[in-house]
Image 1: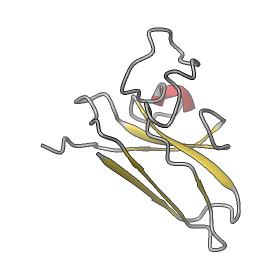
Image 2: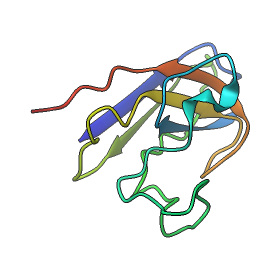
Image 3: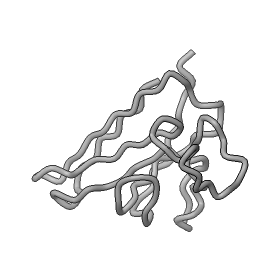
Image 4: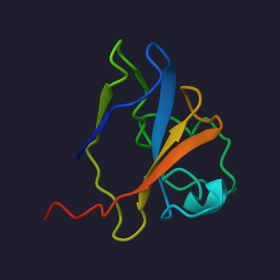
Length: 112
């Protein structure tokens, strides 16, 4: 599976985190739920590095270029479970967490 993020209009030179989340976006920043995890942490919210990592989640961290655009791609040998990956959230810092800056509901479709 491959997920690619392309953005524009961001703060030039700023490093953003971005992850696939479990639920669609809503007016409350927390509406998108937690990060989608291939192997789900039985303890929620998930903070265990055995689960919160770029191999088990879809991390799309990027640094915006001089023109405010950015791109990132994440590749995995697994696919999303149907209906469990619903949005992409931009975070104010790279890595596993950070304030939620923006959210886009995405209709992730099965590849088969």
